[in-house]
Image 1 (cartoon, rainbow, N blue to C red):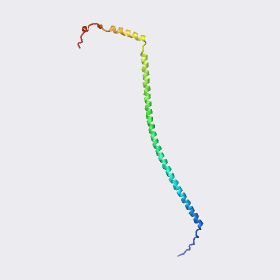
Image 2: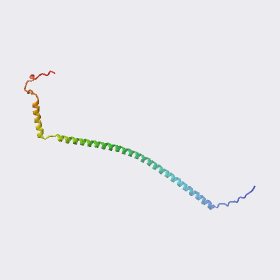
Image 3: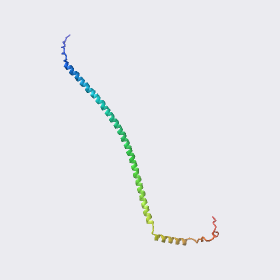
Image 4: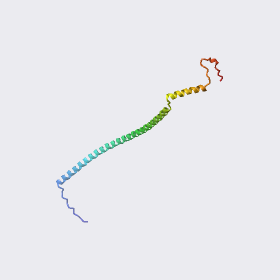
Length: 140
């Protein structure tokens, strides 16, 4: 069996130990700062996610309101189109009525001729002064 001799390691100087401890403390302080920053970032992310959820709900509500307004506008446009058609029909009726209207002279002449025709075509009616008893009786 071979025996090997291990050389003794020289003792670490105290200054190096102090430097190592200082490095460990600074690394730990940086770690604690990183943990705090990570927690703060997590809270910011959570707030942003909450805000995003609220904005998503508002967007859904806005879209629903927009759809309702769109349907109402379509109904309004259809009603206005119907009103326009009714107004056009009314205008046509007014024009046709105006075409039918006769002058006063034509109306009087037509009335006179209508009376004359009625007199010619109508049988003799008893005058109102005659006795009702002389009228023929209704046998129906």
